[in-house]
Length: 208
Image: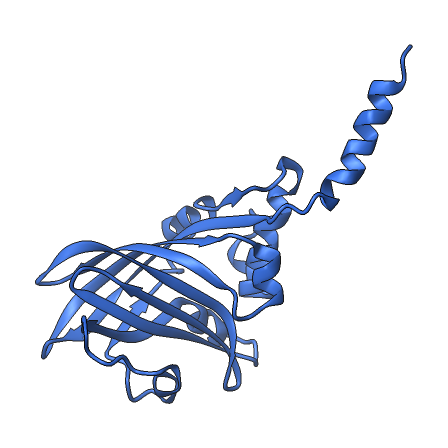
């Protein structure tokens, strides 16, 4: 029996992790809440699609940006699409800051999730609450330090973690990019553990 094919396959499996794949991941996140815009409180919903082209670079470099696209629904404003970036796990005061930026035809947005270092029951709210400001194009945007101080945000959006269907849809929205089949689960778990820490096992027991 010719052993060459078996040896070739074994060598290939050993070398695959060294070929330099930039393993990526994409997922969806739906958030709902309110926005104070043009002197009125309005219901607001944003349906995000996030793409991390290289999860290893993202983990190693807090300044590595993910690509973001979304559908924006703001009461009494025409619905539309927007695009921008998501800066994940950028260092901030007393913890980590997730910075969302996007703009569409008429509006743009900057907002943050502030995840404090002291992991505890509040971490769940920190991870699922986005505070920021919707503004017309051309107006000066608040800075991240101003948003951290709490005196510049005029919108609050929430990921409804308490709804089983929302968690389920979020979990199954994940897809890998340029990732070998045998690393797909590892990349998804890596993302959840990085962002949610110990909460990942509580929120997504079927995934970990």
